[in-house]
Amino acid sequence: MALASTEKVVLGCIAFGIFWVLAVFPSVPFMPVGRTAGSLLGAMLMVLFRVMSPEDAYKAIDLPILGLLFGTMVVSIFLERADMFKYLGSALAWRSRGSKDLLFRVCLVSAVASALFTNDTCCVVLTEFILKLARQNNLPPQPFLLALASSSNIGSAATPIGNPQNLVIAVQSGITFGQFLIGVFPAMIVGIIANTCILLCYFWKYLSVPEKDQERGGAAAGGAEVVVADDEVTSHRFTPARMSHASSVNGVDADCISEPIRRTESLNRADTLSMRSRSYNSEGDIQVAIRSMRASSMSQEMVEVSTVVGDRRDGDGVGPRKITRTTSHQRSVIIEDAPEADANGDAGEKSKDGGGGGEGKEKRWKVLVWKSAVYLTTLGMLVALLMGLNMSWSAITAALVLLALDFTDAQACLEKVSYSLLIFFCGMFITVDGFNRTGIPNALWELVEPHSRIDSAKGTALLAVVILVLSNVASNVPTVLLLGSRVAASAAAISPASEKKAWLILAWVSTVAGNLTLLGSAANLIVCEQARRAQFFGYNLTFWSHLRFGVPSTIIVIAIGLLIVASY
Image (tube, rainbow, N blue to C red):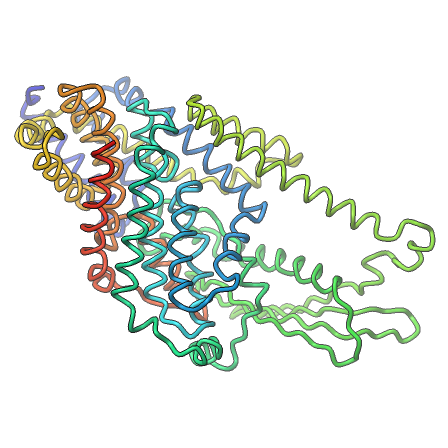
């Protein structure tokens, strides 16, 4: 493809440059509009500058990729409601045998979770929990946060639904879910082992904490006044990540006032259930749980103190009461739950009539059946993907089945979908397609292509370097959109099998390249921001501390995985 007219080349480069600046640095001083608005601005400029027509812009939007993204988001939301991520958190803490064992678990669990539920979702869910776990065991948070971010990126490379760039590759290449898994999964396993070994070697001294210090927990780290209940560690709730400014990557700033209230209500319900499952034998039985809430952009801090007053049966049969006090900079609210006897509707009398506990059992069975339906539907989606059925429609079908099985208004669930991410992809598709029409990407590729053929070790290594650098300069999804068809066409000239191999190499390198720097992937930024904003347990993961580990880890993991993927 020859270069377009000079006017189109210049205007197309300006539009793409604006998109690139706002995508990589979404909080630039002169236009802090964020990634989503930046992608739409780039798309609009491509049309206004007549680099492409409005009809061509509509055609550039890849609906199958958007459908697959939407479906996987909805499925992840239902899995969170079904406590899947709570169980993942429990797997991290269950019978842990010290800091090194905990680090290995973080790497393994985050890699598997990212392969199935996307790396961004995994990082949103697990960051705060891992931070609290490290503080409670008097361990440095840095190695565990780096393990979460890097292992999530590596693990997400194994499946087409692990990250957005893999979705693009799977749809454009036509590679089935099973073929993708077979081609990259072995490299992912070896990469996780190598990454874990690098982490252990790098932080061995910091992880060699005397056992008595670990048993003391987070008293030294969090202060004697901060107590974290065990139930809280395994009941962390999340809101799916949304495209936003780099300073608010966790994506919940829009709900910074209402979200803590919602979370407080859910925690109150959990506490009430646990309270009713226990018997209190004395007047002085008091359980105090101080739960940390995220600090919002308005510096709102909420602390909930739940007090359970013992069995006061003064003649009216009044049972245990729980008083919840929620305080913030703006207000102080005291909520007193109904006594147990009243809440249960005088369970003693009901039991005499033969109906005692019937409603509670029925509710528990309904919850159990609903959770089973969510897990089975998700399993069915994975089976459909492994069978080679259309990935977009498999994910959308699973999402619609879950919405139907919920038997409630779907608005509350659909509001959690990251529509800003979907809009970002629409704008990016148009902007990248317009930049391709200028002919510049093709001219640059023609200079590199003769030396980067995958039929030789030297060519494969050069291609990997190009993908690594471009993924950190232009981000991984635009890199895949720019290089995908060109790399595949170059490999197809060698053999049909080489074309599939080229796609898998692109998937592996562009994903693991995100570990090079803190800005290399959204997952890294999510971990950084979630950790920095965590109340009581905040930790600042700096750019340089990430870079010192990221450079050797990325180079070694890419090199080892490249040998495995290239031999596929």
